[in-house]
Length: 220
Image (cartoon, rainbow, N blue to C red):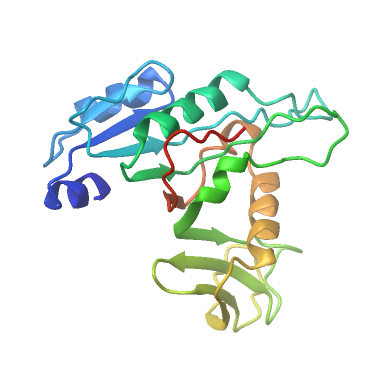
């Protein structure tokens, strides 16, 4: 849909995927609008590219059952993203389900630390839901956070108390916020903890749009 929206504006989108499997799936799928696709770190931006989409760029190496601490993030992937941002200049840039972490010099620094260039992006779509705690949803517990641009952030809470973890609660809009509420990150971290480590970086509903394009300025 995002590629189609760019096409309606007369822009040709170039999609960058994290690996060859995504590129193969994209090429095999039937798309109403054709767009270029490349592997992040290998493909180059061309003059005909009107918009850039990065799908699931991830450099975080999550904690595993054999390790009590997460490994250091990949510098190669982070550098590949930075190069694209620099070369994209004025073009619109979107990142879908990004999971990026800055490189830290002190191994005991609080992690994850987001790259500085992420401050140039805003959430145009965000959705996170809380996994059941204590095997049920207590009445009034925050169960979801959503943002759909240009609307404000919305926090939803359980309107009923469920008796089992499989029973979905009825929800109500608890409050709205102009800025991202703190509970959004708290719920995201809880959802990641509840999922197998191999799927943590893939299970997200997060679309970011760059709001600042300043050629020649690179952030680490």
